[in-house]
Image 1 (cartoon, rainbow, N blue to C red):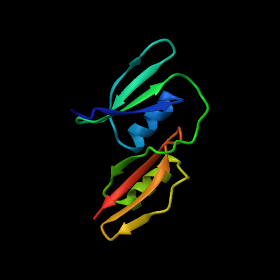
Image 2 (image 1 turned 60 degrees about the vertical axis):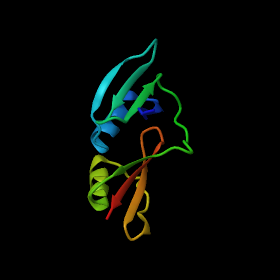
Image 3 (image 1 turned 60 degrees about the horizontal axis):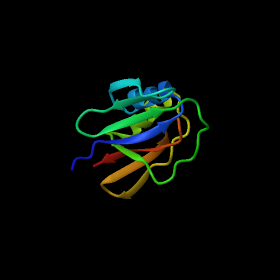
Image 4 (image 1 turned 180 degrees about the vertical axis):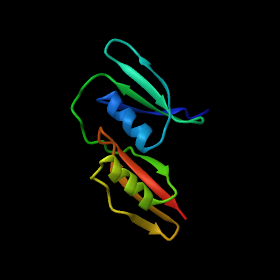
Length: 119
């Protein structure tokens, strides 16, 4: 068995692609219609992808129980990039042990995204 992707339901494909490409740094490998009023995109290199599915505008909601984590070289550099991008809701840096630090932001649809620095 092979893990292929994680699917996120999004309300605006362009906003979500902007976030995942320009903030997270994932390349969009595939984007196309997937039925009436529906569009999908796959992002990422390697075996595991992020799949975005958009069925048109819908109210944003709180997402509990799912988050995605991405390793970065420097939390401080990442925070600066996020602020330069215009993000203002950046979580506090947490350090559960001397080897790991992280913080969370929310994507355009409210999904938690974690940035992790491993020392």
